[in-house]
Length: 165
Image (cartoon, rainbow, N blue to C red; front, side, top):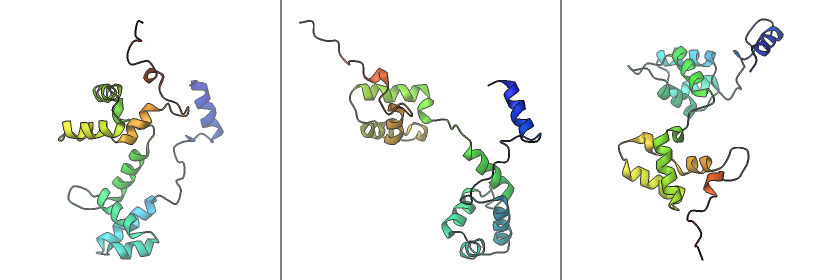
């Protein structure tokens, strides 16, 4: 991208970064809601009471308190907001971006294994290495070119050379 285009965007936004403070939908917890959760949680309110006060689902509050708990088990709203923004960043790295794992999956696919069989074999072969456990959906997504809807070209090549006769 051209640097001048960035300057045009900042100028059009009144001198501020136009992408820095994009408002999130009401589907996600806001910073104010996280502060309320922290205050109510410190006041020994239960998950049900916090959910009722905020008008949110109990599972949302429970998940928030569990996912974003600090080492001592305390809930820290500013840290939770920061973690939320980090998790929401795009693009995310994919497991099959790791070369050795991608080669292992491709080797099994070339042998006419299904993605489900590949998934099961990787789990069985490397039980103590969760970074090598790949879902069959991840394998299917890597097979299809995004936005095109057809298989990768290198998988269409013949597996065996044609017979000479």
